[in-house]
Amino acid sequence: MMRFLTMGGYAGFVWPAYGISFAGLAAVVVLTLRSYTRAKAMFAAIESDKAK
Image 1 (tube, rainbow, N blue to C red):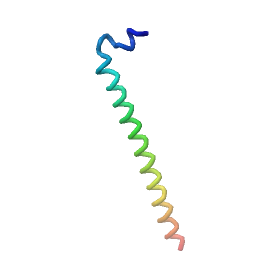
Image 2: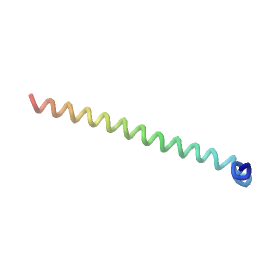
Image 3: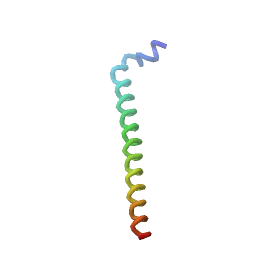
Image 4: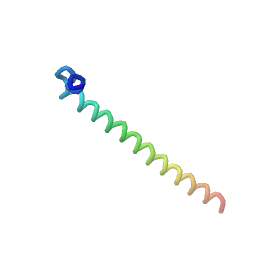
């Protein structure tokens, strides 16, 4: 198990790369959901204006 965690001496490069990749993917998910929520609210506002 320790051999896997040390990654053949490259753990100092590999684990931060995994961390940065995970953070980037998490940011993409958060930004996408936030944009979706805003677009949904904007669409609902437009639809309610049309109904008047």
